[in-house]
Image (cartoon, rainbow, N blue to C red; front, side, top):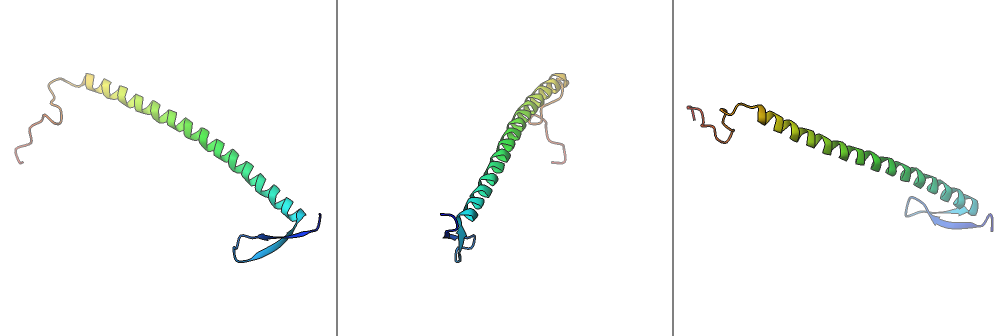
Length: 90
């Protein structure tokens, strides 16, 4: 029934407004459009997050390799930080 007015709740819970079928259809279409954009944005964010997780994992592996390289090139006569004797003023 076009032109029939229906009572619907608006953004303000204490007030009611009446909308025609055409207005309700337009509102539903607007909400569906917003939902589609939000879903697309969520998908983009998910892809970005996955790429960043991969990058962080690669960086962690690189750091481990560099630590290994540095440790193998350190002179053996240097004590490890936990093995050093404290300076005389302690």
